[in-house]
Length: 140
Image 1: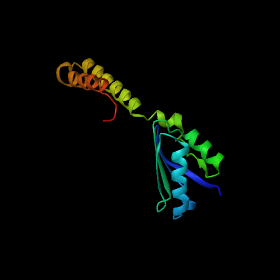
Image 2: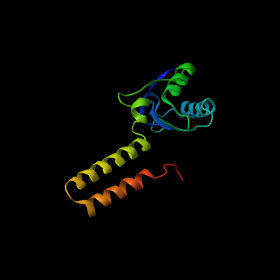
Image 3: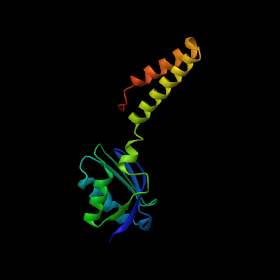
Image 4: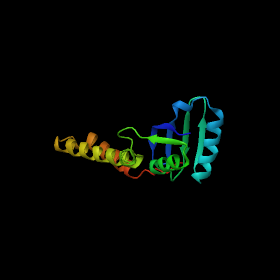
């Protein structure tokens, strides 16, 4: 039996999807959880029959893989809302956000220097930009 699944949240390495039609089906979610964990080796899968959701976490969790596996095994047809594709979502990764903030701080510092506010605002903004550019984004 194939049901529709919708991506609720996606960032590279973590995906939450909902299978609203199967909500409350504890046997289905238990089977899906164990089968997905086996199929997506190295990923952690947690299914919740009460909410009808499945959380997949793993270094190699990709929407394309989930879509393919769900379709091939007949578990679900995965639909991805506009703007939640891997390309769009990877643009929102922590690294991209950090780079954007560094750029904003640098531009604000240049603007303050141009206004003659070199000592306090510009040096603070430059310090923030330098500090952010040296952050390590590895999880502890």
